[in-house]
Length: 283
Image 1 (tube, rainbow, N blue to C red):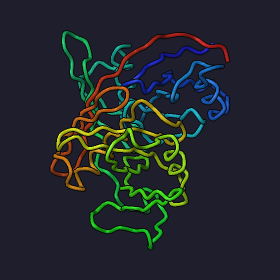
Image 2: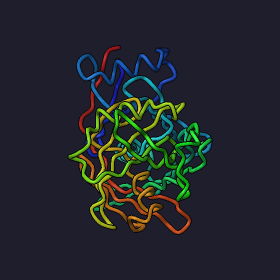
Image 3: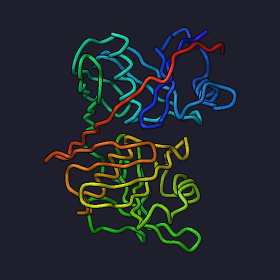
């Protein structure tokens, strides 16, 4: 029997559990089973919370298809709330080790309750080799620091701004989200030949210079209600393309996140995290 906590950030849901070294299962198969919405618990991802030699705690996240992701903005907020509520850590500021580096977390607390969580996501990665992407030079656009790629999909041309927030993202500006088939284009671009490690895909509708609206197709998951790293990547791409200011409110299908970009281009993600229920499962 394995204990778990089901959590969500704007509808982006996760199974969170303390990593137990006695678990000898293949973690890819284990995560696929637990995340299955018909035969398992059901979630976008499975998060293991463990010890760290370099930070307060560590986290590993597996997508619903069994692949392991480097980082997750909504997931790391869920982890932060988990360790606060369970009194594993009793601090207003903690550090969490991820495969994308150590992230600083600040709690916004009212009356002893976590209302929001602020994550220092660090600086975006713009070097194409580190995103990573294969550069098709005939399609490369060089009008900003961000690599822009042209996609020609069944006669429709789309331009994506590529960057990494610890995991790869392709941000595509559209006039209206209602006019784009997110699932159709998302699953094609996720596995496009440019991306050896696949890519998350965000379609962005700019409302004004302080507000954007995005639809998300996550690598290894599919369409999700929200994506924290996707919100950060979208806000930065729009900022770099001179469409928005340094503080942006991001509307996703599951709700709102706030993104702030400082003068050194460190990106801060601010939002809540919610415990749905706790349980045990026999595997």
